[in-house]
Length: 436
Image (cartoon, rainbow, N blue to C red; front, side, top):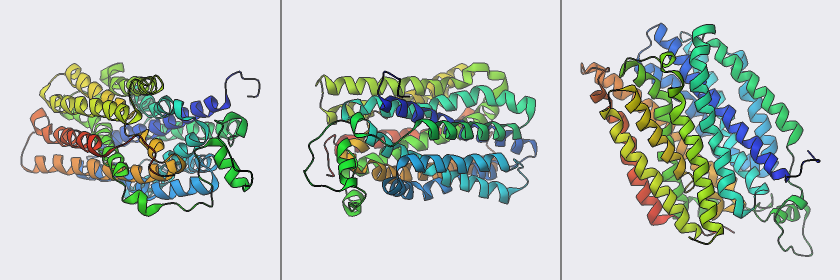
């Protein structure tokens, strides 16, 4: 790595991109494998929703502790430990829908392990990435989620068909272990020479000097301003939009395969590469949003605040209309197009709210991300479970689950949330530093 002609921070950003890629391969993979296994023995929609949502119960428990742990022991170590834990669980647990307790506990612990990842990533990026590169660095890192989801949607249905659902767990475990080895070998804590320079006092502790070298990371002895964070309106603007983003994403990620099979009478295996288009679109639009945001800010075309609000509003409003249009199409191509537009513009909106952690609290980015992602995880619990109950209630009312009309409520709820959240972000967000 010392022979490379580009800064080490680019290597770190690339590795965090691969990290999020692997994480979402795991999430999509479980959804696909479990859906096939559960349908084979006739598990009802409410119970499927319960199992699919258990990941998010574990995930929500570790968001704020993840930010705290990354602040105290370093994001690099936290990422490594969390990856090793969830990889071991995937490699050791059998995928048997009849063994409900084992599935519930395994998904709970995988959620806990992965809950440490994104707060740790934001802590790492806050250490390594200077302000003028934040938008595209965060966008590239998070776009790995969508490329991972696209890869999962493309390859796992065929893998399940040819080798069975359990094979998905094996592939996920191998990917997790491989990434852990690469991260251990090539990542490091940031040296002062690769970080933006700031003035430092003549007398300072080692932790303080290391923190100030990057200009963005709080010394480990600094007291975290929990009260100010919890009661900050700009933080709440981020929290509300994180909730909505993940509500829409998790509902589509976990229930779109079911909609294809029930509403459109089309299996994922028969859809070819088109089933990956919504997530691939997220990968493209996420990076477009990051590049556009950094361009607007560095060229001083718009302020940081106006840039964040512009991209967030465009992303969420367009996504809302695409979600409302989705059940109006009765063809696979129309459904894929609407879901691709919706998820693509949601990803574009991440150049607004998702980077805003580093704007308002650069020294406590991992902490604010933990608070924000707690809300996003609650969206997974609420959205995935509620959708299963909506469909089960429709079935109990003798409504036809093969009719797109029955699915309108499923897609309209996140659409309305997108419009509401965009208004909140316009009213209360800021691109200025709130927490010193």
